[in-house]
Length: 140
Image 1 (cartoon, rainbow, N blue to C red):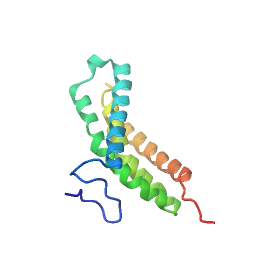
Image 2 (cartoon, helix red, strand yellow):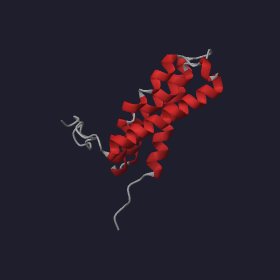
Image 3 (cartoon, rainbow, N blue to C red):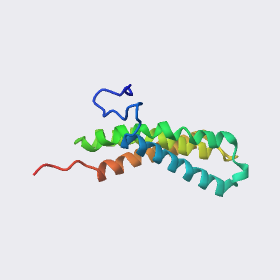
Image 4 (tube, rainbow, N blue to C red):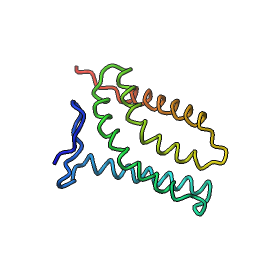
């Protein structure tokens, strides 16, 4: 059974066998980002003070990392800078939202508007930087 995909985007993996390099990369990256978020938050607030929902929310990074693994190859092949930046921004949007909002919500002075504004600016900057760095090579 194949995982349904978006037309024009590469399929991520098959359920049977689950040995796709893309799927393993997405899962390992999600685990790594979740571990880093737990480490930074534990260091800042103390591991004993982290609520159970925070640990569980890091599991959202596992499926969230499938989006960049599908969008980034398409973005790398897109010639138009604005479209490439938009694709990179969309690729970073979900994983960074999980990382950012779960960490921000731990603070007693959590301000949703400020957190959302910072998130949007950061994701757009990520998209612009990646679009500039990962421009497709022009044929000679």
